[in-house]
Image 1 (cartoon, rainbow, N blue to C red):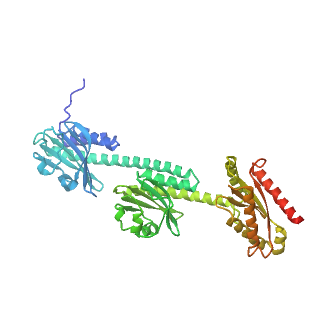
Image 2 (cartoon, rainbow, N blue to C red):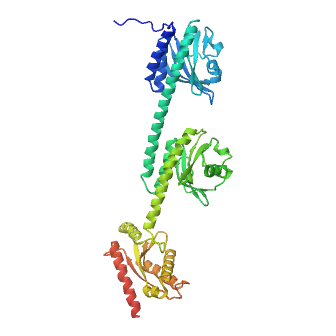
Length: 497
């Protein structure tokens, strides 16, 4: 049989109080979560103090908001979200403990309980001290008047000091866990951003991640151009339209580009930071904008918006800034990849697609041709270009090739492709074009070349051969071979004439 212990006996000597407080401190030290620490403080307090009622209040001095985070009535504890002005509490306002023997309401002490609870008559309350001052209060209350004295007051002061340390430790642990969870979340998003090297896909992922991170109604990635800021990607119901161009005007531009600071806008429709014309094109009531910085230069911005009034916090700005760092890196990598890919697929002399690019393009067009779409190919060859080069020099030859490239680009529709095949040979891949249409296209090119101010007077001419997708001409190689055969047939016919 365990001995029966009177758990509400108040320690009477100073040594006993220290022993009790050490025991409470030891018990609370093992509790590391905020939600659990309040119940643990309650449990340890009612072991040594009479407490028909009990509560813990935490106070934010910056806003003067106090919140009852835990209270108990007749031993039944519960978490709470009761709020009031902290300056209305005598304990919080003065930072000193209060002992009341009766009539609690007259001393501005909080009285809690259910509707059927008996009124509490006496109480002792003590401040919870944090590193920046009073962080809240702890209170025990009784249904009978005169239940507490100076000994209980001193004991609760000691419990409050121990509880303050325990609460701060639990908050610190909660903050560490929150930041760890945030870091993992940001890391997952960063992995998703860098998983693609397609710049369009990366932009879409950045917009989606921004909206998801802050649970926003809209988000956008803004890219700087000479003419203004263009919406590279948009997400959510109130995201601005992709591709829209906005002028670089207003105080917000200076803050983002020069100061490189975040901007939080609580009342977007009436904000003086943004020009009226721009505001009218934006949706939502509140927004936050973060500069997007890469290689120590601002390349754009991230924005998130809310359809209803919302106060974005500095912590949320810090989160979006962390995402912006990863986003800028992912976007720069994608842009670098796009530039390298363009270089690998572009002829450096003429600026036209090269042979590799042409072969990739024609492979895609063959798939459409197999489904019934017309496809023709023209192979161009400059006549006697070697002699031209030898006579006038390689610089003149390069100028001639560039001029031919410009002519071919000017005569080729956007949906088609013209490429430098090699040396003085060029290829035009013509979709939705018959064999006759290909010959007409080639004839226009030859005519323009003969009238060119550089090439015409030097009598530089061009021959061509055409081929059309069909029986016996169904692969890249077969199309090129057929066009080459037609090209030399045309050359021979011209020589014989």
